[in-house]
Length: 540
Image (cartoon, rainbow, N blue to C red; front, top):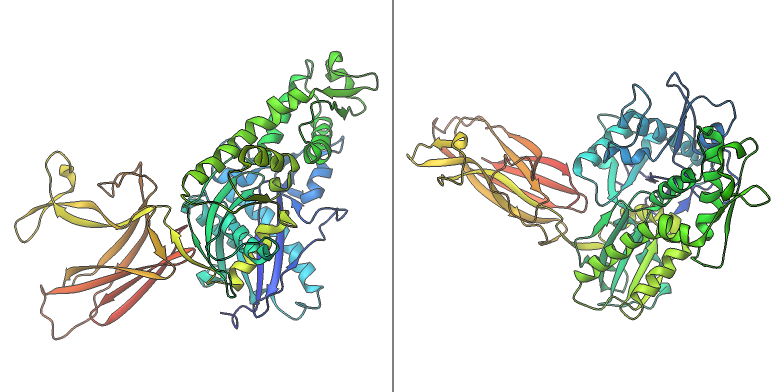
C-alpha cells in the first residue's frame, strides 16, 4: 500500500473549523498545513464556512465566506454548521442543494487549496494527487450511513474516483485519531504499562470520548480499548447558538441586517469565547456596529454604545448548558472503567478552552490522576489521523459498539415470529426466515483482524447471498426486519461455481468469515474451493 500511495493526507472536516496534515508513508514525521486563504496565520485551521449567491452559485469559502457575509451589500447566504446536516434536519441549506452537495462544495475548495500548498513543499512537489491516500476523520457517534455519505461527498468533490480502491480513503473516528496523537506525545506524561487514559475530543459539533489501556509502553507501543466510547452533540457551536439567542433577546423590534449581527457574533466567537474563564467580576462588552444602535434596546448599552453582558448571563445561558453535558459524558465514561484513570487528555478546538479545562479539573479532582491539554490540541485529530495510518497496529483490540448478525432460518415460535416470515423447509419443519443470528455482541472485545466464522449449507446449483446486519440496541433484536433497531450493512452475492461432478440438489457447505478490522469488517465466503471477499466500512 505504501508503494501505491506514498503520501498520506488527513482531512479533519469539522463543524466550525477544518484542518489538514500530511506525511510520507515511509516516514514518521507529520507536517501541518497552516496557510489558509485570507487568514493572518494565527490559527492552524480554516473556518468551515460557505457563501452562496442568491442564484445558488458558490462565491467563497473559509474566512473569505465570513468576509463576504460582513459586506453591507451582501445578498447571499452564509452557510455554517453544515457538517451537522448529515445527522439533523435543522440545518437550512440553499435551494436545490443537498447536504452532500454543500459538503462536496466545501471539500472541493478545501482540497484545491491544500493540493496547491502541497505542491509548493520540497517534500511533496514531485508527487501527483493520484499517489495520495486520504484519511478523513468523522465523529464517533455518526452512523455508517452518514460515513457513507462522506465518502460520496469525497467522490463528488473530485478528490476520489468512483473506481478507487476502498482503502484509498480511510474513515477514522475523531477520538481514535486523537488517541494516536496523544500516544505519540504521551512521553511528556509519566504513563507506563497498565496505565489507563481517556480522550475527550471536544470539537465544534460533537464531543467524543474513549478510554484506552497501555498494553506495552516500549516501542512499538500498543493500546487496547477499555470502553465502548460515548459522545453527544454538545460542541462549541452550541455555545455560539446559545449566544446568538441571548444577543437576539437584547434587540428591539425590527430585523437587524445580517452583516451587523454577524459582526457582533464574531466579537464573541473570536474574542470573548476563547478567553472566557467564568470570572464573575468581569463585565463583557461587544461593540455595536455603526448603524445598528437603532436595533438595540437602550438599557443594554453603556455610554460608549457597547452591548453589556453580565457574567451570570454568559455563565447560565451560554456556557453552562453545554459544559454540563460534557461533564456528564466524562462521568458516563468513567462509570464504564473499573480501574483508576491516570490521565484525561483534552483535545480538539473546543478542547483548547481554558474554561472547559478548569471545569473538568474542578469536577474530577482526585478522581483521576491528571487532566492535561496536549500541545497543539486543535490539530490533535488531523495529526493523529496520519499517525493512525503510519502505525496501523497501535490498537490491538476494541469493544464493539454494535451487535452484528446474519439472517437465518430457525424453528418458528408462535406468538414471537411473524407469520409473514414463516416457511416450510424440505425437512417439513416450519421455520422463521428472518431471524437475527448474532455473530458478535455489542460490548464484546474483539482483537483487530480477529475472525469469527459461520457455516451453513446451500443447494447446488442455486446462487444465494449473505447479508450482514447491525443493531445499536442494548437488546438483541429477534428479527432482521425490525426497522427500528436493525440496519442492513451489506448484501454479498454467493455465486455457485460450476461443478460437473456434483448432482443438482446436493447440499454444499458454505463458511463465512467475519474479520473485524479497525474501521471495517471483511466478509470472506468459502464455497467449494472458491474464496470471495467483500469489505464493509463500519465503526466497529
